[in-house]
Length: 70
Picture 1 (cartoon, rainbow, N blue to C red):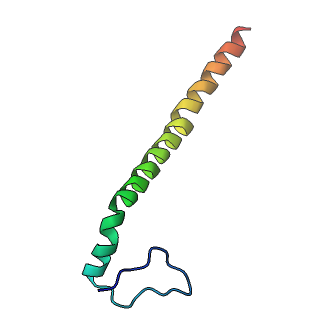
Picture 2 (cartoon, one colour):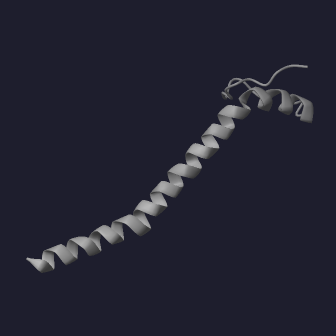
């Protein structure tokens, strides 16, 4: 049973035996890496959305209030 290459390059075609077993053999060692990337993307997106749609409008309102006080 051959392992899938870590990096798919154009000159390095993936083997044609795409059985569940070979895919499982390739995914298992990289499971923590894949999961870590998933959580980084999730928290990055959550941070972006919170900053853009909650924190920035609040800061703009506060700045307008402080400018109107002067």
